[in-house]
Structure formats: C-alpha cells, structure tokens
Image 1 (cartoon, rainbow, N blue to C red):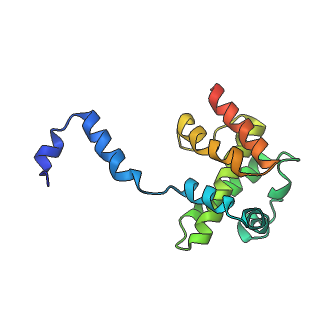
Image 2: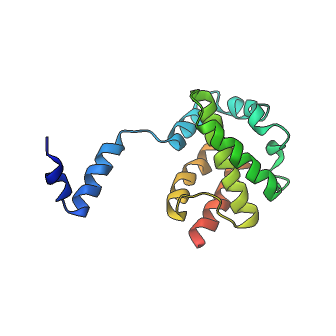
Length: 151
C-alpha cells in the first residue's frame, strides 16, 4: 500500500486514472434508474410514480404535452433532491426520476440548464434515457440532450 507521500507525488494523470478505477465499479443513481425503467414492469413503475407525494400537485405526467412553469420545475427539482437523500432506495429512485424530468423539462422547454453538472456530463447521463423512456418522454430527453450538445 503506498504511503501518503507517494500518493501526493503522483502525476495528475495517474491520480485521475486511479480515481476513475476506484469509482468504476460503483453504479450511479442514473444507472440505477435506467436499470429500473428497463425491467419488465418499468412502464408500470413509471406510471405509478405520478401518484407519489413528490409529484403531487405538479401534473408532471402531462408535462410532455403541456410545458410546465419554471416554478413547477424548480419545485420538482427541490423535492427530487430531498428524495435522493432519503435512506430508502425506492425514494432515491423516484428522486432521481424527478431530477431527470426537471432537468429535461427545463432544457427542452426553456433551454436552461438547472443542474450543477457540467453540460457534457449531464448530456452523457441523459442520453441513456432517450431509449429507456417511452414516448413522449424519450423525445423530450432527446430535445434536452440536443440543447446541451449545442451549448
């Protein structure tokens, strides 16, 4: 095991590679959500999410057809971040879904990025959902990725 002095003196590229190797095996919340949506009951799970507390009063299931207000998007993002921090894995999945939807709707409808992730990272994360989410959501995700790619 290298000591701290040996690690401190590593070139930046080597440190970056070590960090990437250490993190490679860990599944991201985006990956867990994509996996959940691709399960046999993924469509039913998605439909069931519209009735949970996080989406209450927002009519998010209608957002692909009716652009949400910026205030509703901000509210969903706030609720989503709270759910992502929950100890319950199901709440975390729902929170990640809400986070994805809030970001997609902001980008697709207003051309505004509301995530702290850089545009390239967010676009990479969202691309998986173009195929995973059924129409009309997949189309919204594609529009959001296009906005990110052109910025």
